[in-house]
Length: 245
Image (cartoon, rainbow, N blue to C red; front, side, top):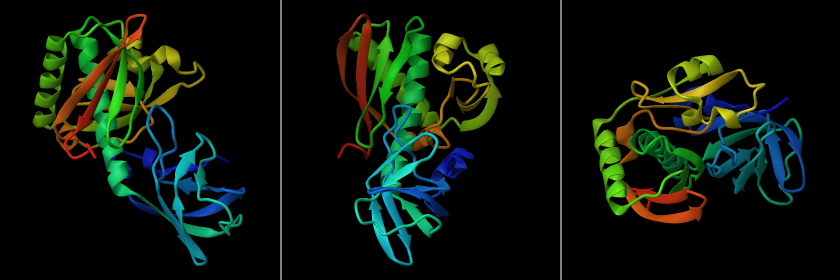
């Protein structure tokens, strides 16, 4: 049975920091739990770190991977066995930075699509100190970048609500064009999707990542640079106030 992803239950659940679980599998350097708050690498978002503790000790979680069974990498000779009860705690500073960065990515992706002739987001990497988004087809001038980040920061200041829900493919397609939501990249077998929505469909996109409750929590966005990646693709890098270190 796949690990239960506790952070997926709601946006409010993204703010939880501690949980209890049982070990369902072990190997030389990692443990798998029946439930977890730790976000595994995926969807462009980096993994959470933190600690796992139990009666016999305390271990640092340095890496988290897996979309079904979630592996928590804790190093060799960890001493845990199947059936052990543990308590987990995520590194909140890192998690919150990822939540802010990922919500900022949704905002910027939605704006670029609307402002620049339907340019799609074709890749992204979310980290705690800086992040990047790849757009296609578009070639940004300095004026376009200035306009984009000015508009994004205006919307951040407006503190628009961010919500999540479960929707069918048809429901999503009735609101947003499939190319905007990258619906073609999702397996056709998946009929219901977790959707992140900014305000009244300022952006609406299927996503399994962690996000903040309102845009104001993102803080000021700062443009770091752009790079031509070829074939009409441009990479835009950014950071957020308080995330630069």
